[in-house]
Each structure stands twice: as C-alpha cells, then as structure tokens.
Length: 429
Image (cartoon, rainbow, N blue to C red; front, side):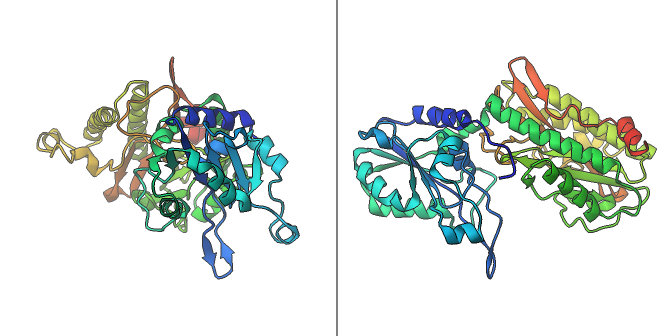
C-alpha cells in the first residue's frame, strides 16, 4: 500500500461497534474481494471489499474474518485469515502480510492462514444459533456478476442449513454512515491531495491542451502524495462534453472560449474525496459563463446550509430544487409559466439539473447509508449542484465534501478555490 499505516484502533472500534449489535449466540463472517480477470493472463488491480476493510484494515486478497463474541473458545472470538505466502509468490507478486503485520494493522491477535478457515469455522459454528453473512446492499448497485459473498452465502446455506441466517448489511448501513475522527482525518487527507491536484491543473490549463494531459497532471499529483489513485474514473469535460454527466473519454482538445467541467477526487487509504469544479480554458469567464457559474455557486452555498443533523433526504432535495428553479428563471432558462404547468413528479428545473444534490461519501464514493434516515452527526455528504445547457455547449458543476457535526457542518474542501475571481487569478498568475 502506498498510504501510511493507520492506527489499528480504528478497526478495533469498528469491530466492537458491530459485535455489540449482533444477537446473542451469533457468528459473523466476512470475505475479502474477488480478484477479477482483466485479460488472458492479468487481473484487474485489486480493490478490497469495503466492509472487510472497515472491520480489519487489511488490504489484501484471499482473506476472511470471523466474529463470534459468544464463542465458547476464547481463541476464536475474533479470527483473521490471510493468504499464506511462499517463495514463488514473493518473487512474482511481492510482499504479503505476515501474521505479525496483520495484527499490527488490524488489532486482531488470532491470525491464521486461509487454509485453516474451514476447519476452524466448522469447530465453532455449531455453537452459534445465528449466522450473519454479508452482501452488497448499496441501493445504487445491481449485481450482474456472482461475486465472492454471494457464492459464500450459497455454500454456507448448503453446508449448515438449520442455522438462522441474518444480514450484516443492516448493521453496517448504520455504522458506516457515521464517521469516526480517524475516518474524517483520512477523508480530509484525500481532500487535501485533491486540492493540490486542482491547483496544479489551474496552472496547467490553456487553449490547445488535451483533456488527457490534464488527467495525467492529476494522477501525477495523486501518486506523488501516496494516494492509491483516482477515487473514481475522472471527468475532464471541456465545452459540450460537460453536458454528458458521466463523460470519461477525456480525449478532446480544450478550445479557447470553452469551460472545462472537472469531477475528480483522490483515494487515500481507501477513503475518498469527490470534487467538481468548472474553469475557463483561457483563464477568463465570459459574462454568460460567469452568470451561470455564480448561479450554481449560490445554489451550492444555500444547499450547504441545509446539511445539518435532522435534515430529511427528500425534503432537502425538494428545497434545493426550489432554489435552483429561481436561479434558472433568473438566467432566462425557465419562465414562471414553465413552473406553473410543471409535472410535480418531473419538475421543470430537471431539464437543466438532472441529478441529485448530495450523496454519502466514505470508503465507497457513493457510500453505504440509508436515504430514508435523517442526516446525522458524523455523516460526510457531497454537495454538487449543476446547470447543463446543451444549446450553449455549457455545463457547470461545483462540488465540495461536507462533514456534519454537532455545531453545524464543516466543509472539508473549504480551502479549495471555488470563487470565479480566485480561479481566474490563479490561472493568470
């Protein structure tokens, strides 16, 4: 891993919080992610299962975790299983965790090789009444590939059919949404790296530069600062490309007079930043570009005020929609008549602002959380309004990451330039 060692206290606390919510006489089992083939003899870069990392801090393939707080054998209340290395693996793939390193990372003292998993599990599972298993229940995801957790569920139910099976995800949905101080620090680190990449880009952009060249500048800064890489595939969308919400080709030349919409963020220690900015290719906004830009910024500033504990998700988005409607009328994109005759299920503003304003952020960019629970202290949410005008070849999106605290919210990207004048100043300095 490129990132520095995280205190094992984070993962110990996460396991304790999870275990406290288990029913009596319950065992919970977690698996690391699959390794997915990329071509005939290569695998995709390994990305750890978010829940497994949340509970262990282990960033390696072919691992497993057992949590059994009521286990009659005290050795097996928390057990971590690792892929056992050998000389051949060391030569071809490099270093893997030793048992001692895994303990230092996770805080778990009972560490075994993965070959011991079946025997140890079988020796204790009959003393449990309930088995908690994990699957991906993020409501933004629909699986089309049968991944490790799903295969494991089938295997367990066939081998141990008379146990009661329960879902770990219902517990993790509540826990992962509330960020600890350490998680906030890791997210802030990702945001700080993202800031430096953005400043670097502002000094690099000019007419004639390629979107791909800008992407290269970003990843250079990320890796230089020990980030794993991009939190998600970056969007470098100049001119009319910005109208495509998930434009990722990044293969066009940036033209004088156009605006570039950036949407990128660093991943550091599996925690993510998510930032959007829009900048003029030539370093100066036109009056129209600035008017649209400032309208989006006003919506963002008003939306941020509503990101406080107790806010209801749907009510929040409805209120943001009203603010955006007013701005679109001011820009001449909507009329009051358009609003009066709008379909309540498809408000008029959606023609120019199609996506939601916020999502939870954490180990997953769209982090695992309930959209039906009020916002709470410890949530980190994005705030990302945008206006997209196909007829003008103009798309503006602005996005910061916001932490909710008892005293209100804290903008984790408050030190990243966002005012139009500040962006122009840096680009022309």
